[in-house]
Image 1 (spheres, rainbow, N blue to C red):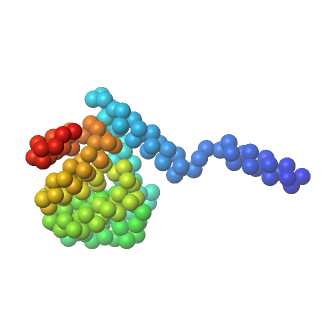
Image 2 (image 1 turned 30 degrees about the horizontal axis):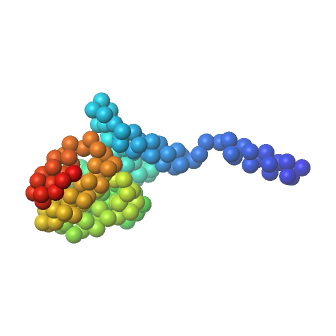
Image 3 (image 1 turned 180 degrees about the vertical axis):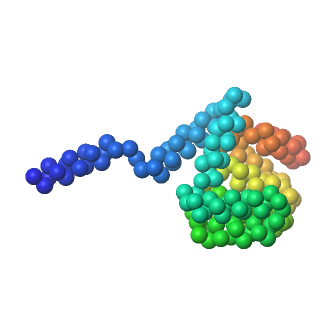
Length: 181
């Protein structure tokens, strides 16, 4: 009898949908696939959907810290942004967008080394984070490393081929470096 109950339980578990995290991961894979194949009619909506998903930490308290950090960046109160986003990254170290927002604050404060370190953490957590890849490219370009910048811009285009700013940057750096593609 015990074996029958175990078999029924296993069969039921197999028919239940995946966990919410598994479903989100799968749907993110689908969104990235769609973004790669997007045309002018839908790429912006896909980009915004992905960014919206990245912005959700899964915790109301962490989302509040993120909101406060974002607002502080917008009003150029970088010290407050560092406080809020430092707390966010301390309490939610697996939340890639927290690191991305803090990298943005560091970039605005011209603390490029710290920005790059936070962008590295973003990319460890979410290698497809096209905004973080673009951030690395921008910093590399500002630091006088156009070849590295071009490499990161190309990585963005491999994920998000409709990004007009990145396409312009690639064209500009190709011209500057005398490269092709």
